Length: 303
Image 1: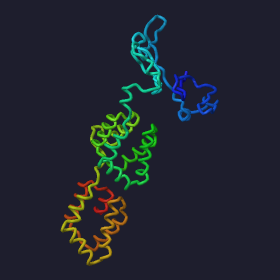
Image 2 (image 1 turned 30 degrees about the vertical axis):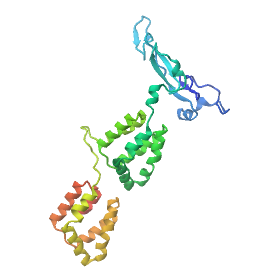
Image 3 (image 1 turned 90 degrees about the vertical axis):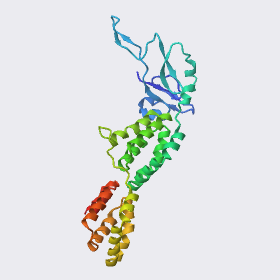
Image 4 (image 1 turned 30 degrees about the horizontal axis):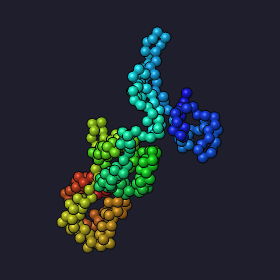
């Protein structure tokens, strides 16, 4: 027997052949609808009813069931639309009132606090900003996907979050912090699990991060582009071809934003007209790698 809770939050029942909704609408096709379609109409299910212990004909226990009827009872919790198992002495009337009991009110999801602590943090802002450079469409859908998650619809958030993790580096410590805040804010388990599953994407079997760290372009610019060697390199190139040399800053800026076409062209022209010492070139590559710059950029410099 497959049970569903009707829109009024009542006890689970089999789908009726005919049902009149509060707005007067009558439906006779409930049994033909999918669970998702039923949910949109307020029918929640299928709902599994806790089982009594089962015994065979000789009185031997064959299934422990979900509770011991000598000490516990099954009660329908109307406000949460789920069965709960209570000790026999507990008053069950408050569970049938349609109101949350006090301890559950205290555990209501605190999405506002989660947003303040997590989504407004420096780490997440950088995470989204870098993702926007790599795939502006995916990053732009994050706010709407998160809003849907707040309303109990997790599919879009699941897809968008996993895509963001693929394109924007994030430290596992940050993920663990997000999980900790989500739990302290009593966010739904379905939402927390999506974040928890992220750890499997960014860590190996030993728990070490596998994704690259965030590119540190500022350090690279400070160590390389402001160095005497690089300044002399660009200055000499300007005497040979001022147009190419003047295009370097814009091309480098595009490379920082994940667009490497112009930088590849300009860099290749520069090294044709302005000699680069092998040791200097090796130093540039070493700094780029230590700053976790994208491999696409490093490959251009490596030639």
